[in-house]
Image 1 (tube, rainbow, N blue to C red):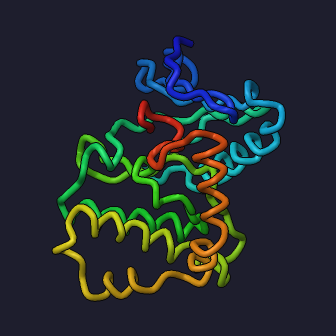
Image 2: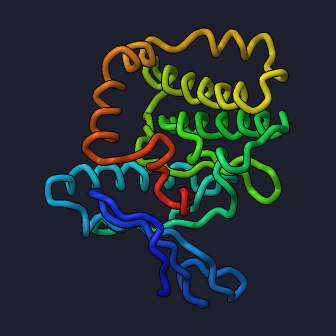
Length: 226
């Protein structure tokens, strides 16, 4: 399949590929763009983590199959994940200022959480897309959690998914935040408070100093990314 390299790092490569007319990624007989995440070229010392993250993404996408605004998983085998491409611009480029986008984003998150999936990486604006219809879509489920039950840990992650969306709303249309939304913004989960005090410092050191990622990198499947 013809391909365009979107990203290459220690965890492997991400390519935009075109499906065959009669195979994966075809629609009404016409080939459609797909995203292929390949962990096989990853550095030896990062391969176990690259495959772990790819498996997490595959599991989350399977749990969300048929959910509008989430890529359809086509296959995952031997460290290679193939999924649907969703047309749209990353949030930091599209800069959505219509409150309807954020209302739709909350509905999308509720669908995720009803399926017992927490995205767990929504502070990154590139993980939010604005489609040509100005609707929200989500990508990069490598850190997603699929939970067997909606226990306290899952509810904290779900709360922080919503809180991250509201932080983006505060950036792009702060005047439309409701009183309840302001209260959610003022109340990070205990898990988020621990992360900010400890884990985030380690994460920033590893991603910025060791891996050379910028704040808006890491979404994995758009030129900036999709």
